[in-house]
Length: 379
Image 1: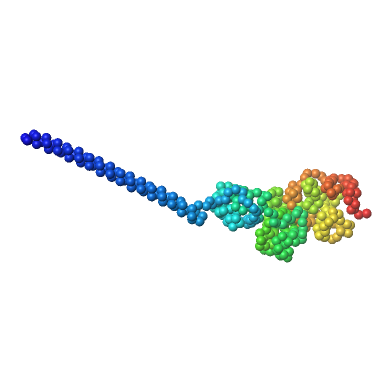
Image 2: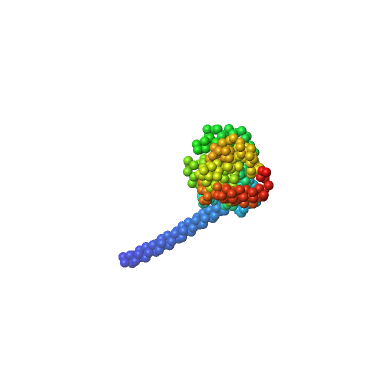
């Protein structure tokens, strides 16, 4: 074998070794890839097994998979008290304790999406259902029909001597505590009242929380009166005078005639040389003076009684309000109807028909009509 043959042989031999190495490398790559794939598949199987195993185990954990809210409008009935100043979460806690909603968070989540409505939830006792969805419970707290009235209703025109026993019966606070409250340093009675609460105890329905003191109750009523005076655009310097006129209107007028009666009061006060020479001559002031209910008229003897509240003997307004007037009477006193009337009489107490006139002779004829209809005039 010559040198050329040797070179060709070595070249062919080297090529064969190179092809062998390449095949060996390809085989190793295939084995390595297959091994990695096998490892990855095995890992995926283990992860899937772990996932489903955890899901099965999680279902055994108490509360882990339970929803945080009930569904639907609930069932049965339960009373829930919402107190003044409670936050949304505190209301939610009260609902949870009563079995109404399932979680505080479910209720607060609903309330957070409707802040204006949430702020409109009023203190009071509500008729709710058990196991309500948070949304259903929220809506029910905004429904006036769900609110159970457990308060005390004070009608228009009551005297404070009539108000205190009603408050006492409803709240359990002794009448004497209300009488003492009138002199309390914590009483928020405006200086314009001159220290007298008569006229300042606004008639309404009140739901006082348990433990509310007599002073706190009276303060709430006084604040409602000042709110009404403000709404009627009465200047503060005229508050007491307006309440005095309003109380006379409340004691004398039918629902449709308050503005006219207020005008009669003002006309009589202004016309000091007229038929009543500046005297109001209102029976309602005599009734207050005597603390007498059950009649619409007064006797000659009663009208001759000496008292600053006797408007048949004294010119001008009485010393202060003669009852506690409502919103309509306050509005009428603050904004009387226009007219020249000086006289009025309810000729038919059953229907409330009242006749007004500026003429005294016509008024006497109206009075006779009243006498015929009622048979209550003195002979």
